[in-house]
Image (tube, rainbow, N blue to C red; front, side, top):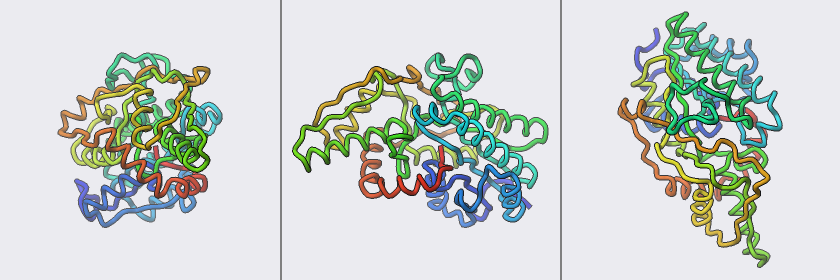
Length: 333
């Protein structure tokens, strides 16, 4: 019999546990003393395969599911592999959510993304702005898949009375991030670029220089992944309902301000230039987090402190982790 509320002995499946979000959720669950974590790598369980997914759920009977498995990437990756981004994410979501219903999961938390909202959204972005305008073209494939995941949760709740909830995090960063320059998001990409330029200057004596994409004027909100993990556990305990719920800091910075902060943290003192022929993406993306705050949760890791932590992790693990990520394409959002 499933537990009515998640406790220390509940059977908990974290899908995508080696990715950025999934690994943070696992750390948070372990810190709370949860003893029954069900974890599978993408090599052990391909969530794009319905029969394999069914077999896992039938054998393990998870009571709670954190659905953090996804194919993820930045602007370049989304633009280069649109078919992969939409088809693989649709398959993962469909299979896990369908299996969760079929095998009696008590509650499921689906992790979406703030890119689901229209490109020209009023700021800050409220949850009800979903589907009120055109998406940002550079990541619409991923966004449409994530919107479908939200709607799938809502549909199962409506038709079958399930307890499937959806959380929409803002831009994330932290330990286990992807630092590959071809597929990473802006913050980890900057950390790596500034670090490598600094090392090159130290070893060759050449003046350090870094070229960054776009104009630097777009504004972005960044949330440390450990804050997101804390919010996910909070929502599993304290949130019910069909409406997606935003998870963020409630404040944003320009990309130029972000670059200046990262350069200072890394110790980069060279020249920064901007390639304005490259796309900026959405002009601004700040989430309205009033719904989340009303449940009693707020973020606590300041951006500069979080960047310090992330840079320290990168120095110890970054390149080795990059190789692991290349071998494990189904990462966490």
